[in-house]
Image (cartoon, rainbow, N blue to C red; front, side):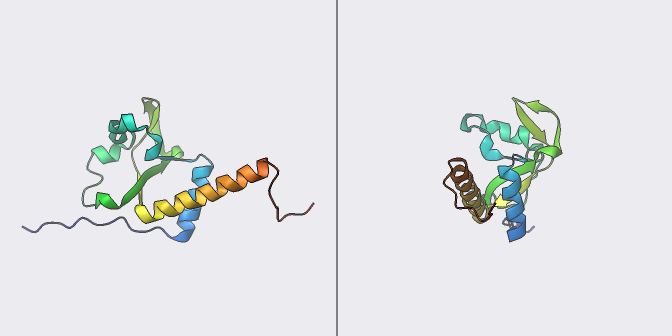
Length: 123
């Protein structure tokens, strides 16, 4: 009998990461960090595939975030959270890139709303 080696989460392409960031800042994506720390047991109820062995064969130390698009949520909710029958796994390195890009978008948006932006469009 051979032991199976857990596989790391593969990286996303730059285009996939950019689309994820767009969708995340637009509120189209639910990520596991939206679940408060005190309710971490809800993770398997929100992402039901995890409770059904969805992480088998995966090196969980490479998971940066678990996410899914809201339109893929099932009917109903659990403790106010959506319930998904699927999940996307983002590796640690990619999640750091997502955070960096999302923070840059947030900073740019804040600058625009405060009237401090140096826009590229001319009226």
